[in-house]
Image 1 (spheres, rainbow, N blue to C red):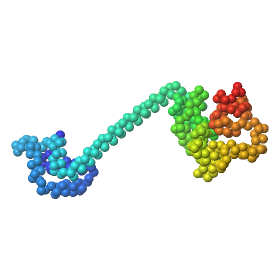
Image 2: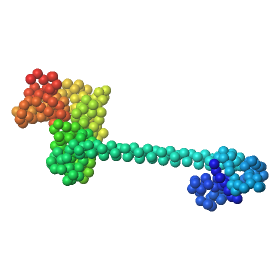
Image 3: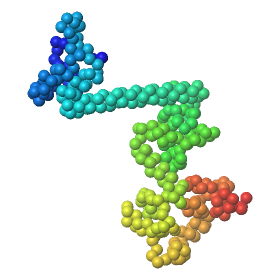
Image 4: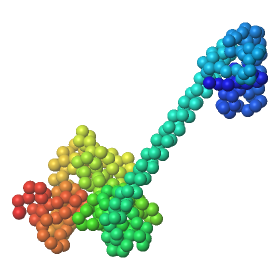
Length: 333
């Protein structure tokens, strides 16, 4: 129910004044709007006063208030001010609905945030219950700032983890995994960035080397421009063997990853190129017994150990003796 004082102004004007005030209009603007409506509706005043006779209290009534239902007030306002007030009412009701929706969404987000925080705190408590010391320096975790990894249940001192990650980046060992031998789960990207907050230059190195690792590990899908020091990468397209690098402006054959050979098949160009190759290098490579990785064709030299090799570039496993993959192709045993 809406209560309107009988000594106050017309209930429809009072409602309109209230809505304009809630919409942010100042007093001068409100008075101007009300005066305009009064002026336009002066001729219909007598008719409008008699439009809701049943709502006016009798002379001997002890009630000091007029009481109307919301529907009566709305009908009266619409009758008096027509389409102009309809637009204001629609805008007012829409703004109220939007505000209600905004508050509901905000409440849901806060509840979800609190739930996530509670879940993270519980997970951290479980981890700390199982692990008291940093696995790298073997000191109590609470002696320094520590970081729980998201991909596995292990917790490290931030500075210890940073040292480990920095060394992996410098040695170009990717992916970077949890240092614990029995775990070896890949460290989450966010954890790596948190560990390198004070080392922005190493963050850039990580971006660059991890991208290169991804490209080298998927040569059938992604390719790097063969030009030395050109870091442009592209998707392999078997339908278009020619690749024109937009960065270094050179052209290559993506099938054999060499310079573009116009009107020559890859086999013909390869034979011709091999014949013109530097004999000194191949003589040196044969003397040192270098082998090419069967996946990325990177030259590899074995310094010690058995013939079971792992390419440091693309992680492919192969036999150093015959040069074939260790996936059943090699028959050396």
